[in-house]
Image (tube, protein in one colour):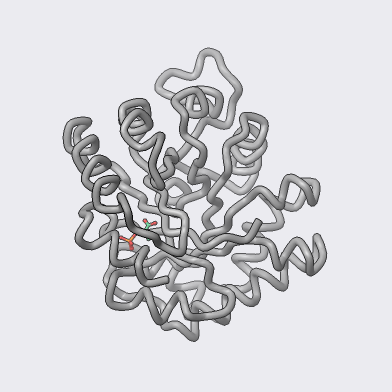
Length: 251
Ligand code: PEP
């Protein structure tokens, strides 16, 4: 179902103790407050169990930042979707551009991760987005279409309906250079149209599409006011309650 979502991606930041403190602070700050969106923390794997204990009876939901593309077995250092789900986490980011760029995650690998996440009742937050050279060459729609179709379009309409999409232009991630509200809307509308072309307008209308890339309290309101922008995936600004909460309050 289409929902407004603000999800924090902590990336490789925070010790266990620091992460537990931040989750507690966020929970406390949200207590007695109504925000018009789902608030999600995507922490490193090792934080999940502790943070789940902290936030389980609160408005704050929990996700991981990755999961393995294999079910189980001799894959040293990997963490499976079943393991993520067993911590109480409900979401998992899949296909973040840093995973694609630094860890060689291809559309085919990501397709496996999505399947395993869904098999374990996790909601994938599936990231797509072009690099600067692709945008400068006017190829952003082609790139995003390929990422979506090669990783997701084998899913049934029912399974696709469980997925959250996050459009994250790579040139905007961690750079302080946000896409303009118009650029975000244009791409989000294209993504929704691409989904409609495959699954129909009803499924497309129910898909949450988040924007990610240097979103902050100053630009969130304008970005979220676009009809096809259903929230944000937030990196740097999710590392402090003072910078994260105002983004959720922008709805
Ligand atoms: C991200 O990594 O998903 C992200 C959007 O990062 P930042 O907000 O720091 O650009």
